Length: 321
Image (cartoon, rainbow, N blue to C red; front, top):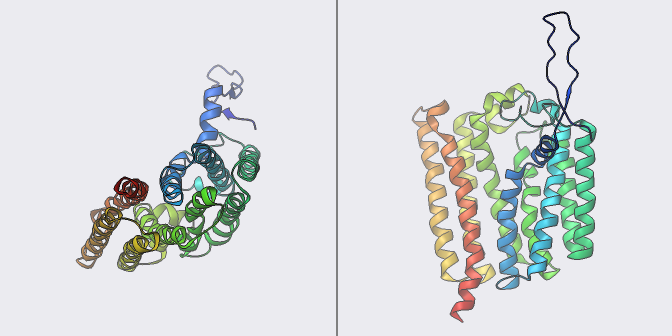
């Protein structure tokens, strides 16, 4: 997995250009960490840890939690690295992704692919041997779905790419539950749907900010092929679905009033802000003045706080008796 940082040669006196400088170990490590997309992994772990608390009815077994987080991180990193390998051509076309190692040739295509495959094998074996077989199967499904269904099939062909492709990002909820119980139930599937409905408005408001990038790369994100009003109307509908399903988790999982109150309050805020964006669009506000990134950041906070409530609720239930 060769890694080089190319320094342009100079020939003011007719000298030969300098050969490429060999990257330092730190640069080598940094490039491959970047291939893993650690910020995306953080978001996935936000949904993995809390569901383990619900599945355990309190604090999950320490070893199970540590092993699940370790192999879950490896699984997500493998999918992200292979995504960078496949998408290196369009990453070069977009301002938001030009600094990725694959786009800048800081990591060779072969190196990125090998890195992703090694992580995939390692995470699968780790889940199977040290957690359970069900979590390993779900992890493999998530990797394969992200690579073959989202990246290769949907991303460059349909405006609904993030809707169905988002299924891969919902899988950590099921993996976390399976790791603790070695089974599946309705409760994790409800949280699966929360993440599923949350993903489109979260992604589309970011894509509205980088619409020109996606258009140049010929990626048909909904904001590229539809009007602001159409995109924001769908954001409103998906925000309502997210809020409603998050409240459904209350009776399905038998949570306390604490989770219910947090879900209602956060859902109301998410829906209000989505309607506010749509109203601004209908009033003729366009472009940067719409301030879609505000909703994007709010949606991040929404998911994080909702899953904090998921984590805390079983602890409150135990404390109350």
